[in-house]
Every structure is written in structure tokens, then in C-alpha cells.
Image 1 (cartoon, helix red, strand yellow):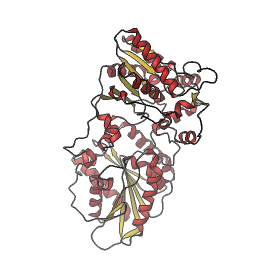
Image 2: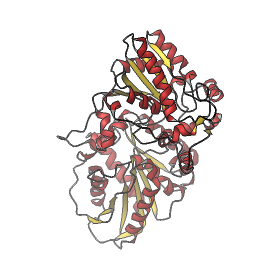
Image 3: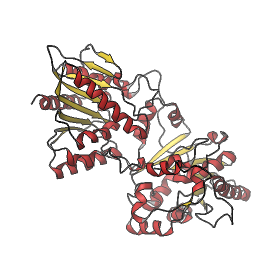
Image 4: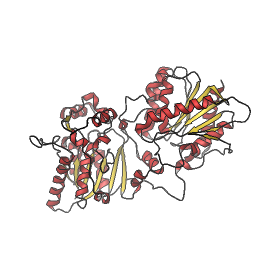
Length: 505
């Protein structure tokens, strides 16, 4: 018999597991919900601080009680949200007793890092981090309309949201601020990640991160690590308890999707050849930019290509040398416009401001080049670089003749915790005026990104914005190196033609 030990997240307690636990029990499993001190059970006593170690102790108590029963069942430890921190801390000390750890829409806590680092609300993280001193007191639970700051409420009924609010408890601050301490023993325990795509990235996007080669992510391609997706928000035990129970049962049996590790014998998808056979062209490299000039005298209109991300700082080659960007740049230069590729510092979700500064500086350097027509410039954004388009949509300068975007993220994902950021193209399109926009839409886009594209198009239509959509019906995210089909090639040609037509109009 499998024994599930379920640990709830911030502000919540065992009650959130009621329906999921009932379904697991009906399937023959043994289920234990952990009551964390101050959340699911009373305080630690007068004058006693509740911290992460307190909650680790709560989880250890449940694990030890299951082991003492001696029924020989496998313990599957499930941590949701903040709950993964005490779950991992306990598993590190009882690694031989735990058969599998399930990260339920949670992060990847590391030794020495507090749970605060995983709090999605960026402003709250900064506020608490500035507090200093000995952590005391409690963080009040969200009001009913403030839960989205902690994760997407997609899929929750009104009654479920009412119940979540009514039963929420204050979170002891020290549980978020005390660093997690791991000996490394927990690395021997198999892991399953359950990704809620209504709240954050799905399996395909995680695979792209692995392909980029970031060392910290490579562990996710270990054969002992499996993944599942749920098309719902951050609280699947409330929005789809039956589906979650089925996934947990399959995870306990070792099921799930396994990521493909980086293969040294073949290039990763983003380094495969561009889908068009474009002749080589000379380029001029200066600082973080490469300039490709067309034939003939200038000044020439220019297209500046902005890569996506986040891209880890140590990735080589850097994005301006990736085949997609160099392919577009050579193709554009061959059709009469200067093309620019650049590297910017979008290495983490917190780097959008730095990346925006890099782009603005690069654009001004390009416009200052006498071979470039400073009054005819287009900006072309890709993937996770999409949010960087917001500044240019919100206040288009007169020299910006066109803005293009390929398979872009056009609104912050809920798990980013920055819904009020300036990097929000869906909101910025209201101020775009007559700026032409060319949007290249992948038909097989990841669900979590496709939602932002449709939100953008809906708002653009409502605002009367000038948006031309170039569809790639069977195209995937990054189709230029993944889909060597006639329709994908035609989409590239049509997109370039549309941008150049607006540059020369």
C-alpha cells in the first residue's frame, strides 16, 4: 500500500486536501495530511517562535508515525507551494524512508535558500528581504481578491475561493525567512514534478530550459525525475481533485514524462540550422551588437532582433549567434535593410529592467550609425523577450515604424508574481496608436504562452490596434529550427515581407 503524506502550502492547512485525499483513499491508498504548526494546528506555545525547522519537525512526526506502523508501504511525500520546503527538509533526514517526493506546482528549493525566494509576489519578496533582524510576527493571509498574487486561481469555483479565504491562516514569517538546510541525502530520492500550466511553465518549456544547458536545470533530465501537467491554476487539489489524485497515483508507480538530457552528439533545438538556406553575409561586431548591412549605399532602414529568455549567463554561444537570429538577420540584409542582433541581460525573471536598458542603448547606437536611417527602424521580439515590447507599445517613438513578435509571451505568467509590472504588452497595446504590429503565431504553441497571445489579440481588436497575424498552423515554439516545412518557410518570408513593407512605407 502506498502511503501519501500531503503537505499544504502557505496560509493553508490539511483541509485543502479533503477531496483529493478521499479519492486516493477510495483507490486503496493510505493518506496522511500534515498539520503544520500555526497553520493546521495550534501555535508552538507562548514565546516559542515558529520557523521552517518547526514545520520540518511536523512533517518528520508524520513520516515517523507511518514508519512505526511497519506495514511496509512506500511513502510518497507531496509538497505544494511552500509545503515543498518542510517536505524536502524532512525527506533529507529520512531519505531511506521516503520512496518519492512530489513537487506540486512548487519550486526547486536549494540548500541555504529560504522559502522567501519562491514567493511569487516580487514586491513582497523585496519588502520582507529588507526587513532585516530576527524574523518575528506573521504574514496575514490574502484577501479574497488578492490570491492571484500567490498563484493563478484558474479553475477555482466561487465557493472554493470563498472557502480558501475563510479558512486561511497567517503564515509565520520565520518559516519564509529561515534558510533550508539540506545535507544532500535527499538527492537519492526519486522526484516527480506536477506542473500546473494555468500558473506557470509546462513540460515543453522546462525541456527548452534543459536544452539551453543551465547546470542547475540539468538535474531535471535525470531518469529518476518524472513530470506531469495539469491544465489548471495553482490549487489543483481544489480545482481538479480527481485529476490530481490520478496523477499522484501514477507518480507513485514511477509514471510520468521524462525530459530528454542534453545530447553531446547533436545540437540542441535552438542551435539547429535555420529553415531557410540564406547566404552568409559579413557582420560588424561592436559591444553587444552585430550589424549586418545590405548592399548599396545607405542610409538603410533597420530591423533590430531581440532574443527571448531568460537565458543563463553562461550559455555559449550567446543568442546573437543562434541560427534563428543570424538567419533572420542575413535574410533581412539580403532584402535591403540593415539587421541587428544583440545580447541583452535577461538571465532571470528579475532581469527585465536590465534587459530593457540594454535594448534601448543598442537601438540608440544603431540609429546613430550614419549608414542607418534613424527614422526608419523596426523592433522584432522573440519568445520570452515579448514582455520587453511593452515599453515600445506604450510610447512608440516616431522613428519606430513597426514592431514584430514571434511566438511571444505577451503577459507575465501568473507564477512570475509581477502582474503589475510595466512589462505587460497586453496592457501596453492600448497606447500603441497607429504603430503597425506583425505577430507570428505558432499553431502548436505551448498552452501557457498561447493564452497570453490570445489576450493580446483580443485587447488589440478592442483598442483598434494595427495588428497583422502571420500564422504557422503546424509550427512549434521556435519553429525556425524545429519545423523545416514549406508552411514554416512561407511564414518566415511573409513575416519579413510584412515588416519591410512597413519600414519602407
